Length: 472
Image 1 (cartoon, rainbow, N blue to C red):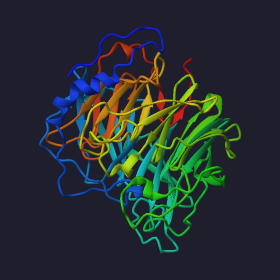
Image 2: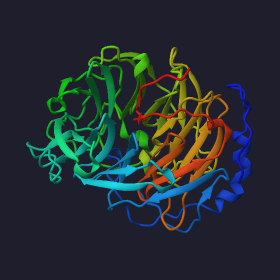
Image 3: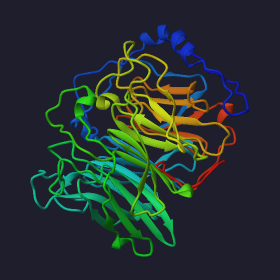
Image 4: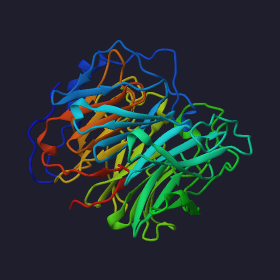
């Protein structure tokens, strides 16, 4: 199946062809639906701890302009999670530790280190050789040789671990900061003058893994301050309430799971530091914050689009004028790209930052009987269009032009099939290539041939949830 290869240069002028593309490709795609076997593997706690895996039986399905350059299989059986980039390295989180991957030649990417470190989630960020890793499963102790411990253990530890990764051959664990309800995800918010803040997102939706310092209606984030001259002294300096965040009813996910309970809290936070803004995906609502005072964010807008089942993740356009939120409909467990599912379910939604007005939404433009909701994503920096690169679980990776959010157009995609089918957690654009951390496959590196991304900017450091520059 082909995709458009010519692109008008002016912003917000590409016509709406997304609906037409869906209609013309359905016949081919129905024959390539993924087969789901009976086993399962770990996933987000809001999913009740399991995620249906994918199996073989389908060939790779992709646009003609997107190429798989390299695959680095996962190290062990653990779920692969988020990605961060600095210098010549990509840092790939897993539920059992993290990988350091040399991407100086992306087509021949090589793992140079794996740091075993027990503790669920494994969300990663990097800053001047410091790697931050989220731990959201109660541990017997803060160090890497910990083991999972019951949530009833009063000494259980959860939070953020900090590592010195400047020498991949000699990775050093330098600090562990306990946070209430652990750290499902975290976001770096640099403040200048040798000062770094970390926003920790957590909540109490899973009764079996909340830890001893976590109450059902958590209703706050934890803010860690890291003195960069002495990061071992990092500590929690505030716990701002999630003002305006309503109680999240897990019934919105549309699956029955007695391990889930109502809660309040934020799933993911993205910051745009030049404008002192943050976009918080807080399960029941989305919010835009003023973070001029890093330790005490203030709510500017609360977004309540009824079609969004679970506000999961967010990303600003690089000019700071718009923000896109992702909906993890079905909790990442139930298929939401079936013929009977509306294009609003499991989509990404774009809003005007200044007013909070809803501008449009985008979802995979093809039907799949699989868990294909949008997950973690980023915009391509330094170009004159809003090009989103997103993971879509068993839908693989999709690239879409959202310059006109009301008329989105997919310009590339790749969904791996045999022998290990896609189940992609995070997909990001970085310095001319697309990197995907896949739950089952490990790290994939893609090339996209399309004029829309020509001339994209390079970033020496790239934490997708920490946007440190503006590209007007």
